[in-house]
Length: 430
Image (cartoon, rainbow, N blue to C red):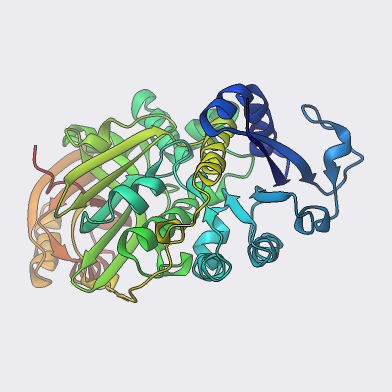
């Protein structure tokens, strides 16, 4: 029998909130046996408490935040309303009251996380956020606790299930981007408005959180350069496959001495790299460090029940560890600078549509040579009067590669816009 009752205030009752309530109800006995406590949701904050909502008693819904904030019996608040406003004010007030907070809000943490962690520390409470990144994969816990002495040097991964599903479908079926996205929406892997997923912003927010924890330095959403998958074609995926690669939307965070570089972009990943095998809506995070070599965590990255599971795990963690550890609130103790994107050395894939006539390839190669860019391999396939020219390059400073592209786009034999995609994972050793 449970020794004590733990009262929860839930902010938001959408897909994740309703699944948290359901999961807590379904697993009540197991949770009680494991924690010695009976955890129950006392109040749920919604816009309109009079609207019927399945799964929870009507009398616990409220539109008054004070019903949670000022209730001394409620010791844990779960924020699931999303966005920065009014979530930031709600979470700040809760922490100032000394209440522990669990959140799945990646936008909030990627923009205001440093201040919220400091508030938690000042008020001897904690903010848990496992559900904000990679769904049911416990990557936050691993970074904060298991990797504290790993001397991490890089984090790379697939942290958005929508884009991974779309790219997987394009590779599996040869379908166009628009058709694969429509299937993702039909299956519930993409929102009606999938913009934040497709343009890379969702992944950028998650990478800001991961980099902040891994490298103990403030990294905000605005510090993460990002590009999405809107311009990836089935032709690029087919050429990548022919060259032994799979295209993924990757988040990449690396240390360069005492500086950090964090970004999100499509990338060709070698077919024998562990990340290449992560398909569908699954996520994976690949960690490299001096003390650990390489570790990959993977699993379901999205979905109401998966996110609810991570939220519930954070609630249980708070209940079973009432004393706040310094590890609970990752206040940045370093203030690393940012390594410029232009100075990053990368490997590139490039697809060009060119006139199929003598001298065009020579002119393109000359421009690359003038900018210190070395070509590793070339594929040329004719299509009537035109040809697709596909190249893989040796590692090069990104500013040099971009300077070459700025010249090449104006060459007489080049049609349309060059299609560069970075190549990641070639340094991985098996």
